[in-house]
Image (cartoon, rainbow over all chains, first blue to last red; front, side, top):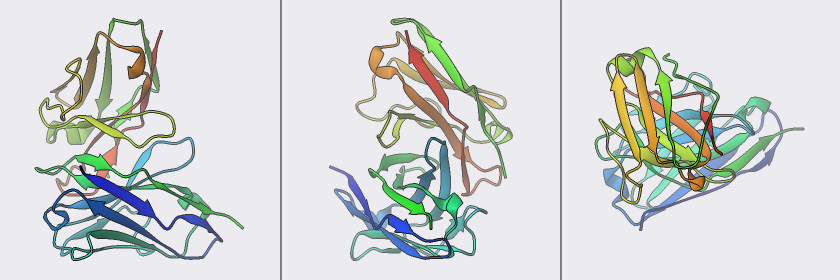
Length: 119
Length: 109
């Protein structure tokens, strides 16, 4: 069974940093592209970042470019999101999502981890 | 970057058919995928590609596309289909970034 379990969320002050993790199991993690998607309270879904299966190709949404860093450790079956210079508008539930076999869609999602940026 | 526009809310009588639309320039080149999200839960993929359903998704869910508009149709809506639905596609560049639609709240009466 495919499982994605996020962790690392919490309350952080504006300007602070947080590192999210996503532990993957039930599939060959190193073969799949991965993404982070977030959802602010009461709002819609927003794509945040993409990383290729090898980690060699990375993309970011303009809203987080220069502040967030996506990475992965295929030996540990883990995906990460380093978030720096956090702003109130980064407050959201952050989901890790596996990209489907042919790409362009997200076939499995974690349960999400809540990040709250507030003083 | 691209935008995908959805109607904010639609309602459907139990057992009837509802169509949810998603409009955007990127849909002229790329298929949309569709996600169902119930309160407090993670999104669930219901349609991807031309009209593909993941394992476990009922066949009352179907997808179609024409020009810059993608549609998700629920034929014979059930009470458990009440949820938010989001479309998603690649950006017009064809790579990530991806873009999500604004979301449609489906109410089953």
